[in-house]
Image 1 (cartoon, one colour):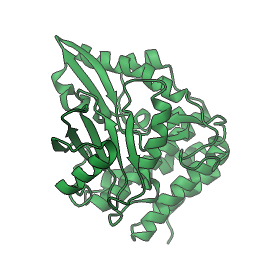
Image 2 (cartoon, one colour):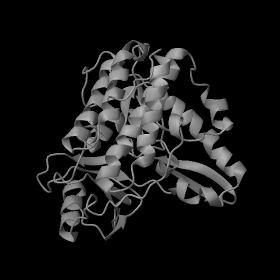
Image 3 (cartoon, helix red, strand yellow):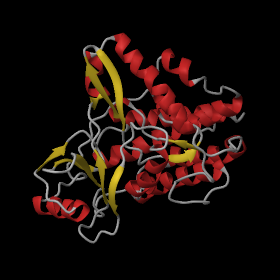
Length: 333
């Protein structure tokens, strides 16, 4: 299944801070007023600023959406989730931002925020067309061991890092995840017929999901829009792995880029092959369906055409029915 790029109008979603608010947050965190700050326009969820000081290193301020915007169940407390995950990721790579200060009290502003060290570089996605095929291949090969190291981190239970011990079975985490999306679709009066059928099939196949016995970390957003690179004299290197706020304890196959992006052979030669047994094929279809559901919800929120996502979901349903040995259900009269 292929990823389809869409334009999201996030102006009401990423509300900027006032100058006074930025000064107050930096003074509270570091005891020093900033020299300057610049709004960063690359993200689509949090509001981010590059902060310059006179006597301190440059840092990044990331601020969660305000409480009065539409957040779906799977998007709750993402910065708090990332704050926990960063502590794990910092152990395996110096290319992951370090949280310098985090405040979830909402005392200074009614939003969660964190300060992170500033990793230099440019987004891979923004310059990939300017790179040679060999340079892009080198970056994929460089990414592979980092992703593999992430996927080797083990947890105590499945699901969100914020909910320790919440799910001892992978199927419980996935079913609750999908059920939450179905609930959101119903809450906002979207057509949920296919979504409900998808949930039914996931429940029917829970035994296949539970072939996953060991919770390992999934980054959740490892595409080129979240990878920083540097270029020097024709050589390219990865300098940053960003935005781990959607990370969860699951299985590597659930990394969404594995289902939706065309990843070149050079990556797989270093990372290793994904499982392709019947159980793994079923689980991969489930993760594709979950991605389609998420896009259906985002289409409603950001007002873009959901047709391709609905088509993807319908295709996943047919695949799951075949994989479970079910006959295609005829539409009700």
